[in-house]
Image 1: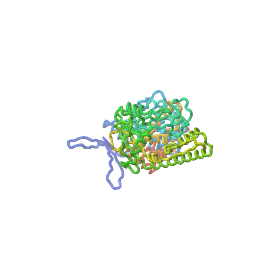
Image 2 (image 1 turned 180 degrees about the vertical axis):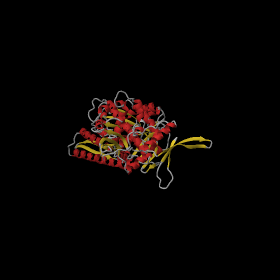
Image 3 (image 1 turned 120 degrees about the vertical axis):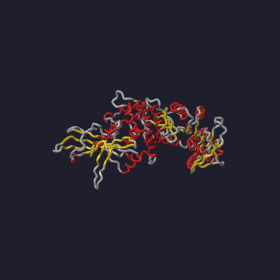
Image 4 (image 1 turned 60 degrees about the vertical axis):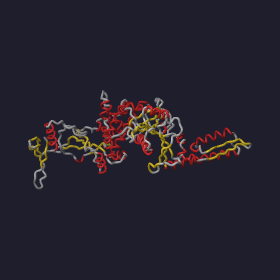
Length: 595
């Protein structure tokens, strides 16, 4: 059975009537017959008859929407309101929180964590606390104290997750970090599967890179906080090293956290074993920068049936210097040329490996300008040493060599261009040098790739290697957009929990980026998030009056501002619908408004 709308014929007749219709099969096919004429119906009566017809057909009642009013709401549809005393209070940020909550559910993290972190004796389920942490990191990255005092009270998350503002405080958020960290492996495996389903990802080629993030404070209680090579130009601060694996499109696969003084190349084998144990052992292609490359790592990958495309150290590039000026260059795109070169005579290079020489015109100009600057500084330093020796101020040959060593250390890029000679003569020291920039300039703008793939096309190999830029962008987004640095937590467990929240927020960020790309909105989420953040929710206070003019309770309607034309277009592209109202409740006279 179903409801049928009937419009009587007649000029100017705009009345609408309803009838209950039943479908049945006959010898001539499907037919319909009228069961009852219902006449005019209000909206509530229409919903009631539709529910009744569904039950008669044996259908289960539809699942209520997120902001549908409760089924027991039988209050009047019309009220008399005192227009002079209407007020609006507690405006909140709705649009960005609603978008993040949608992404959280789209990734299936609400169902996953509800199963993995079942509710116990805690007042707020840990799965809900995890959602608050990750959504806050996505919308307005800051500390847990900021979430308690500013973000959560000023956002509409209370209506989305159903947790009162008074229940969101730092102690609960810190404990939520600890509980969420226990699910790290499960979350990585789930995101691997879910992102693959949403965007039809291929995990045959994986990009691997490392970064570091520093601490504020000494962090003496955290053994992982060590000083090392800082990618943030903060060698004065203790840090941790983060290794990240992403797909060629930049979607996250997994990560690990290492001590701050860990060398890059020592992390590769652990990460390869981690990915194979969690996602299966297959012949993946690993793309890595030269900082992660060592002969032991490459031999380890080959021994497990893996393949790789990696950058190489400058020392190996110098061994193919003679092949730079030869013919055979192929243009990949404007300003980029590649070609296959013969492997240098090196016992560590396998016979199955291929060397790809690459040259960038932009890098040629940049590195040549840098070389020129260091050559000039080197010459100025040598001239100063020569004058000091001629005037007798520099007499000791040992002191002269020490001074030369300092000069070379400051200008190491140009040191190879100079052959310096310091001799003792009767009149004192004699300093001379010969300059040859040709060999050094030949290498400007060039870099060498190394692979064991059977693919012989240097253009295709370079295109696969250059996708490593997506891994670098992942770190940039995590640091700049999602506030990965600096870390204010000092305990090891809390630090790892903080990084896991950033990892999940990055997965949400990339999900939104892929969603926008498929909707024709580009791939930059930040302008979209900022635009939707201007959509607010607020409480409209409607003082109710009786028919005889007496005052009554106050009706509070929690409404959402109507999107403007531009916002409506964005939401339409994404297929999102913003609700008009979140909830309604009454305040009796003398009661304080609900939060």
